[in-house]
Structures are given as C-alpha cells and as structure tokens.
Length: 102
Image 1 (cartoon, one colour):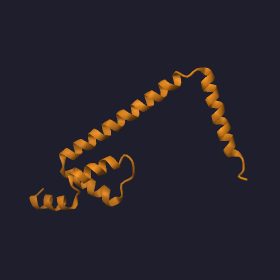
Image 2 (cartoon, helix red, strand yellow):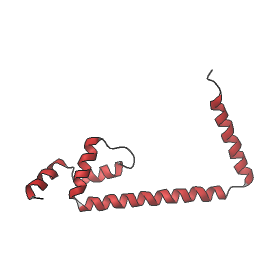
Image 3 (tube, helix red, strand yellow):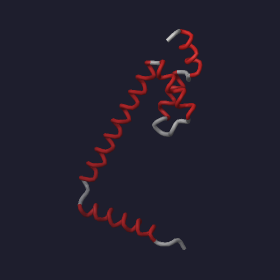
Image 4 (cartoon, helix red, strand yellow):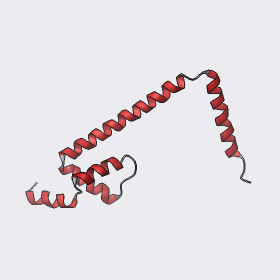
C-alpha cells in the first residue's frame, strides 16, 4: 500500500485506545456497523491491536473452559439428596410458569 492510502485509512480508523475498548466491549455486546468497520480497518493496520485481540479471545476461551470445568466438578460433588432437592425445586418453579396468568 502506498503511504497516502495508509494515512487515509488511518484517519478513518479509531485510535489504539479506542480499538482496545471496542475489542473489550465486543465480548459483551454487538458492535454497531460503524464501530465494527472502524475496528476492522484499525486491525488491518495495527499489529499490536491484533495481538491484543488475540490475547483477549484466548483469555475468554480459558475463562469459558474454567467455568465449564467448575460447573461439572460442582455437580459431581453434590449428594444425591441435594440433586433431588434441586430437581424438585426446578420442577416446581417450571410448573408455576405453566399456569395461566390470573
């Protein structure tokens, strides 16, 4: 790319600080079309922000895997009586939603 094209693209893309904020927010909400386009443009030009996005995605994957592991191990540690109580409570709550509204 020519220097002029790169400079033009840079003027349309967010700063690194704004790109980092958008990368972080993208895991919590859908970015708008302008935000997404600006971020993609910035990522095409900025290796540091691409690396940051890769790191954020890696950490999210680790947290998700840890949460799943924790949930599985917690369920395995419950006594049969506790599992039965939870199951009955859930069924009771679900049955409440099957009734017509007053």
